[in-house]
Length: 191
Image 1 (cartoon, rainbow, N blue to C red):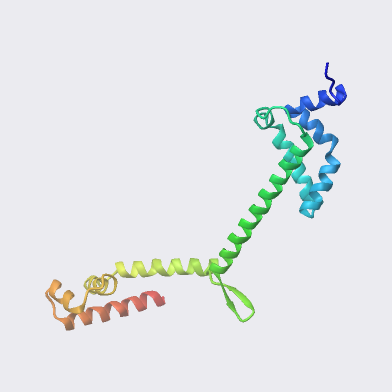
Image 2 (tube, one colour; image 1 turned 180 degrees about the vertical axis):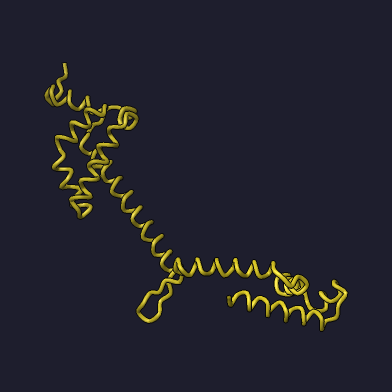
């Protein structure tokens, strides 16, 4: 009869590491060692504590350990799970830094040694919306004929000759309508 070189107690403990309760026991027994290991890897005791907590959450999920079968070295498994968590955090931090850097590059201009935000302030954005609303109201207001000519020329891009042919008026009348519309808009927007 062949005998197991390990004691029965150790064999029973290793056999139980298939289940989350067994891995939790290994985690609890080696918590200090895992904290030191991950503190050295992350450079922060707080981050190491978070990693060990995430390891516990990972092994507490019924689907994570049960489907694997018995573990030959449960402590090595816990180290591997923790290193995967550390790598995920490093990758996530890199993605956040790239996203933030790209955002800053897209929204700021460098003038000398100063970074200036190009986005309008909330006040400027509201003022711009109000100005657009006033412009829309002025375009919808009187004088109707002048505004119709102005819209066709400035917004639709029609030439003076095209507008004159469409409306059956002279080019001089088109220019006068545009001048009347501009004067009306200037007065409406200055108020």
